[in-house]
Length: 382
Image (cartoon, rainbow, N blue to C red; front, side, top):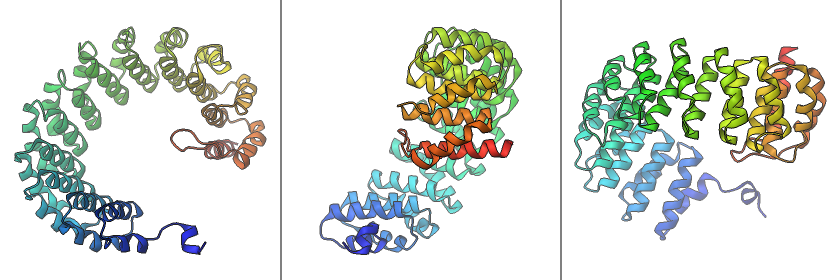
């Protein structure tokens, strides 16, 4: 096996494939060049914009966006007027990724495109560009039911306070308005968000709770506790997380109740919130989760990370035992918990995990990574 093959394909390999007679080979090569992140590919990808196959052209446009090189801007702007709506949409997406301000006015003009998908792509691209010039045109779209949610998201990304009152006005109908108001961080939104906790629309309720957690405004604590009686797991999970962000000790007993009476997913969020609040009343319930007496693996995972934040030395041995658990997510969480606990007696086992445990969770995060973080946290706190 030669060295190049052993190290994997190089940029030259994929550039050569752009000339292949098979359009599928050209398409796949274009996609790969985007992810390689090498600016040398830009000029070659631009040549594919004239490829006879639409799939190849679309992948080239997408790759140019991923590369975020402004050399492609003018070419993509021209494609906003292409007869094929799919090409127009891909061009708008790519311009949002590139972030070149020359795209702002053309994208604003594209907000009136005849195709809804193109309009959505242009809305989100303007949000990514964080363009104050786009705020007024985007606010006008809040009146269009099929576009309002996207427009709300975009003005939230832009962060212009002109959007606060219009977003409050549509909050009862669109959960995206809650997310955008959280992004803006204007306290005028707190009371309307509290009112939204009574919404019959569970998505609005859920996202209002999430937004209130980000505001960390004490006015939200009682309404959030009242909303915790909702029967839907997704809603209670968001409320529990918000209560953890608020850090108010009045939430401790209701959250402990969720640990015992909620589903494993709800118990997991309640445990994490109790760790964030840091009240010792939570110790026994978190120990119950960690030991496996309550909940499943996911709940034990959350308890392991949370119990370390209580800084109670009684958690040391159970966390060290969890570090030997068969389930990788529990071993990762045990590392987090030991890091928060900060006891130097955990260093020997953590160093062993760092050297020998490369198992990863579903997101690719390894026990080795978690152990390294814990070791650094303990040493920095010593």
